[in-house]
Length: 243
Image (cartoon, rainbow, N blue to C red; front, side):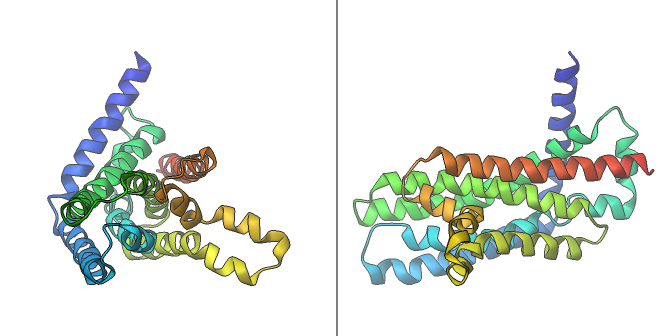
C-alpha cells in the first residue's frame, strides 16, 4: 500500500510538470528549434546521398540532444528552488525519491515527445527507398536511452542551483563531455583509450544505432541514468532537511 502511494505521488508530480512544460512557450520553442535543426540537417543531405537511411541523423543526434535536453530540464527544479515552492512541496507527504521520479518522468516524457515528430524521417526513407529497419529501430531505441540519461543529468543540474541558466550550462557541459569523450580518446595514452571510450555516451549510442543490441550498452545508459537520479535524490533530500 505504501509503495502504491509513492508511485501515485510520483505520477501526480510527473503529470503536473509535463502539463506545465506545455503551458509555457519554452517547450514549444525548444522543440521547434530542435525539429528545425534536425530537419535542415536531414533533408540537406538525404537527397544528395541518395540513400534511404538515417545514419547522418543518428550521427548528429547525441550532440543536439546534449544541447536541447538541458534546455528542456533547466527550470524543472531550479525554478521551484528560486520561488521557494520546493520547500512547500517537501512539506507534503512525499519523499525526495517521489519528487525526483516525478521530475524525471516529466523530463523524459518531454524529451520523447520532442523526438516523436522525427519518425517522419523514417517514413520519408520508406517512401523513397527500401531502408534497413534494424539500424532505424536500434537508433530510436538508443535515442530513448540517451534521452533518459541526459534527462537525469538535466534534473540533477537543475536541482543543484536556483538559477536555470546556470543549470542549463552545468547539464550542457556534462552532456557534451560524455558525448565528445570518444573523439578526444585518440589523443590519450593507448592504455586508457578503451576505458575512456567506454565512458563516452556516443560510443554506446552508435553501437545501438547500428542495430547491435549489446547488454553493455544498455547497462551503461541505465547506470548513468541511475547515478544522476540518485544524486538528484540526495540533493533534494538536503534541500528538505535545510528548510
